[in-house]
Amino acid sequence: MAVFWGLLSVFSVISLLAIGGANAMLPEMHRQLVELRGWLDDATFSQLYALAQAAPGPNILVASLMGYWIGGGAGLVAATLGMLVPAAAIAWVVGGVTQRLAGHPWLKAVQAGLVPVAIGLILAAGLTMAAASSGGRFDGPGIVWLAVTLVSTLFVWRTDFSPLWVLAGGGVLGLILAS
Amino acid sequence: MAEAAPSSTVTPTRADLFFGYAKIGLLGFGGVGAWARRVIVEERRWLTERDYAEVLGIGQVLPGPNVGNAAVMIGRRFHGLAGALLATSGIYIGPFCVLMLLAWAYQTYGQMPAVAPFMQGIAAAAAGMVIGMAAKMTSKLRPPPEMIAVGLAACGAAFWWRLPLPLIVAILAPVSIVLAHRRLPPAVRRAA
Image (cartoon, rainbow over all chains, first blue to last red; front, side, top):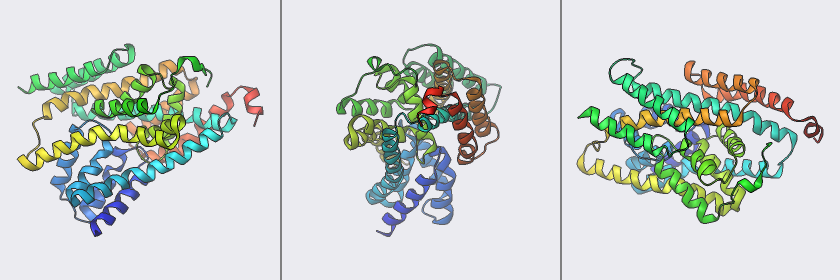
């Protein structure tokens, strides 16, 4: 039970600090779970993170996985609730405010003003992912992965076909190169 | 804001919200952001490009994942609490089951499933999806030059200088909001 409340409070706090989503909260998760509380060792933390990366869906699901690893079923519930509920409650309240104030000039300015910030941060996230997947290298495999990223960028930007094609193509190319 | 054209969008039912978000979650290899925009704006047309960008912008500056926050706000807009719960559970439930299967395999066989080469390729393509999404939103929204400068500043601060996101938002959001306010038509500004 102590683990349940511990996980709930740790992940609640982390989720409220995590402006920018899962990647922003990863260092704090490591600090809390590995360094301060010793619930996971370094290697397990990295492997669980890699495991979560292999699954589709929102990256913050890594919290559920780590909660499960630390505290079984109760840990899973605690980590998931802690990660989702506080942030969702804030989004709910803010969503209500934007609906009530719809059309107010300053709300329009806030909404329009946050768009370029968000798009800039999305672009940064994509570039960071591209740098990570190519290993930051411009030779050998790094070039191949950068080329995949470039093709995928153009495909999504300039066509309306489903991105599933480039995802599957990238995955199959990965298998071919590894064999 | 300008393109309010309600006839071009479709109001989702509760089931639409759940299954649309379930699709976003299950297809979201390497992140759900690009799939969320694709399904909501292009495939199902629940929101216009601009409406979705604005919801995402607010979701971005709130704590938690931007797409998750957007799911709560979009769900609420169409179907209140039920909508928020359905959209949120839709996006998490499928990936959650997949992840538990992977965890079970990891625990049982003591090693990662051999998906690394496949995932390496997916990660490279997913990076392009995210960059392509940013490019596509920009070319459809046609932001004025000062907004492009704000976007590039945010991108450079996060990617190049690796500044913490709360700091970037705290500095750039007020500037951007004031710039956006100056762009409002005079009639709208006076209505305050």
